[in-house]
Length: 77
Image (cartoon, rainbow, N blue to C red; front, side, top):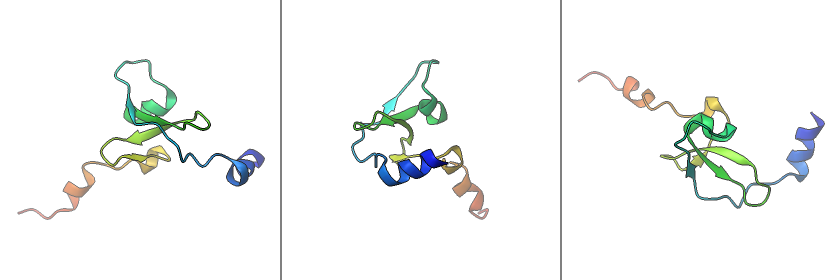
């Protein structure tokens, strides 16, 4: 709890990140396990999962967009 508060006040803002890296092998880092693609903060070295199509960093697995969601909401023709 204190560590999260400390990071919120003084932590890295991850403003300088690498280009998205896609890992094709089975030996993936924890960040790449979610989507297969991740970015690295060039200031602190933290690896964060990235959505290649939206070109955004994903905060949590629940934040990953469902590609079938827009199709299910459309009425049948």
